Length: 299
Image (cartoon, rainbow, N blue to C red):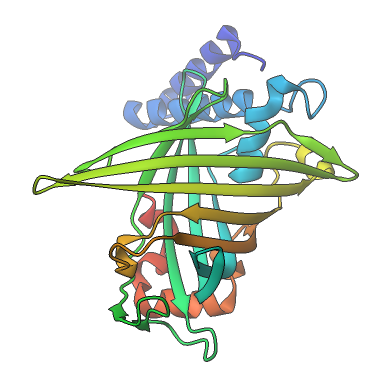
C-alpha cells in the first residue's frame, strides 16, 4: 500500500497553522489538522488492491472488505435459519433463528485493525413464528426458560498478515481458538470466501471443569466488480453458515449425548433499516435502546 508522504503531513500541519492565523483557536486548528491526517492515513491504508484480486497477498484485505468494510462505517449482517438437536445421527428441529449484528472497523498502525461488534439472536417457534421463551425441549421432554441478552460491544483484532485473530478474554473462561480464512475463489462474476473457526471454551467453577466445543463455518460471496471498485464503496455480500457444537448450557441437556447444528443464510446490508422486518420487530421490542442507535451501542 502507498505510504503517507512526509511532505504531505507537513502540508497538513501548515494548513492547521493557517487556520490559527485566520482567528481559529489553536486547539481547534490542531484538531482539524489531526482529523485530516487520520483521514489521509485511512485513505492510504485502504487504497485499491494491488495486482490480481485473488493474489495471496490481498487475501486478508479482501476478507475485511467482504466481511466488514474498508473504512470505519457501520455495516450490518443478518442470518435466518434453523437450529437442530443432533442425537444418534438424527436431526431434531428446535426452532427458527433470527440473527443480526453490526460492526465497525478501526485501523491500527501495525498492520492490524480492530472490529467492534454488537449482536442479538432470537428464537421463534417453528409453527407460530412467535418468540420462544418457555421452550419444550423435544429431546429431554423438559421445559426450558430462554432469555435474550441485549446487544453489547465486543472487540476483536485482525491482522492483514493472516496472523491469528485475537479477542478480549471472557472472565472465568479459558479459550482455545483456531481461525482459518481459505484462499479467495473467483467463480464467474462472484468472489467466494470460506471462513472457519474452532473454539474450545473451558470454564472452571466450584472445583468442576466444563468444556464446550464450537465450530463455525461461513461461505461468503461478493460481486467481483464491487471488490475492484474504490474501497470507499460499500461491498454487498451474502453468507451461508453452519455450526456444529456441543450442547449450550442454556438448553439444559444434562448428560444427554449429542450436540446441536445450525443452518442459516443471510446478507450484509448498509443500514439497520435494511435488516429483515421480523428481526427488527423482535429487536425493537426487546432491546429498543440498542436498536435505536447502533453506532452508540458499538461505543
